[in-house]
Image 1 (cartoon, rainbow, N blue to C red):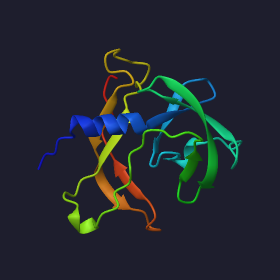
Image 2: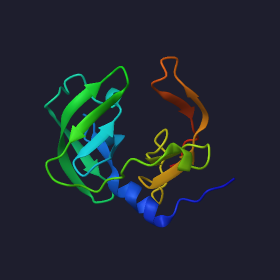
Image 3: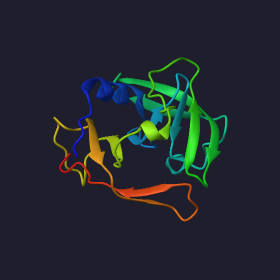
Image 4: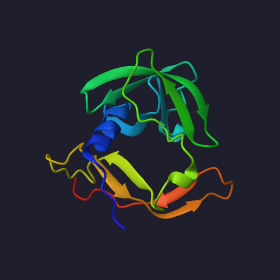
Length: 155
């Protein structure tokens, strides 16, 4: 079965996503706001000097703005970190309904096309893309999902 992601949902996702700015000043790793003032990112995307209470520079591609977010917690074992913001931001709320109401058995990943091997097509560079994850499995500790997905070729 094929599902389409409606434009208003695409816009919500795009507004909630951000990049952590790496040490060479480029947006490298993606995080997402899940409440007006809280965001989540993979802990492995932060540097060792990023301690709880320190600031992380991020950029919002959709809005064309940069901000500093504060690390409020880190969990390397489960590979997530929570970042906070003092002002409200667009967010994608987590589903709070009954799991029985969900339909489908496929995971869709959202991300920005970042360029592969130095190749970039300007019209697709840093554009939001959606991709079906394949080969989903649960980790031995039952705390993480593993999956593979296609990359955005030549972008």
